[in-house]
Length: 344
Image (spheres, rainbow, N blue to C red):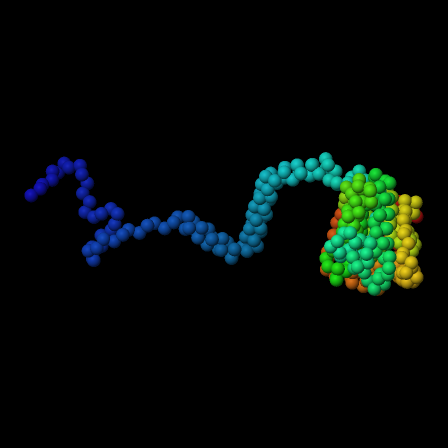
């Protein structure tokens, strides 16, 4: 039999430290782990806030709102420190480069579109069946008149190194598909080698939202501003000769653009369509006399019809200085101020 000395330094453990011994059942019971102190703290804080809210609801609400605003200000400050310098850097690059690809150009040459080119063969640009024609346009020689407008515009731009050439016209014909008049004219000019004026290509672009003649002019001026950062000093419009009164007087006056800085290049209609064209022009001109901005009645309905694909018009985002002109609708001249000289 073993005996233990009274001086032994070893401690005696009757039961395991890692568990508890149940004296009644005679079994070893695992000890419970202490509960998470953090969760206790959160629960206690929640109870206190709930109690405070019952006693002083307005005070607690104000404190919570103040805390939320403080957090938002802190996060905003962190974001500004992290990304603000990068944004400023890119803005500086834009300012250094003027932010406009054609800032050196001063004058606008605008060719008004009248049809959409639908042929897959660019060698048939002078054929009527290569274009989508309305019933009143189905006349011999009609396609040739489109071609003459394109060539006239290219040659006008070729004579002025400071001019921007814009072909203007939207996706106006449903059966022609989502192809714009402006892109059609640009593609024809490309197929014709820019009529020997290859240098014009780099400053020939499109305005692809206009639905009538007034928008041809107004939207092209806005597009010019988008591309150059300024408004044109001079405007040259290319269209049919019988539309000169409409463009050079009615539309120009509606925009209050100086007559001395506005020029018109008109080409004749085909012989077979001239009589009908003159009658139709007289009617449209009278409509614009009553409704200079084309915003009510038959002119407005015509615009809606010429937007079969419900395109969202981006203007006047690119020309904020004339936003009021875009919003204006009335029979009297636009009363607001405009970037160009108002003297007519």
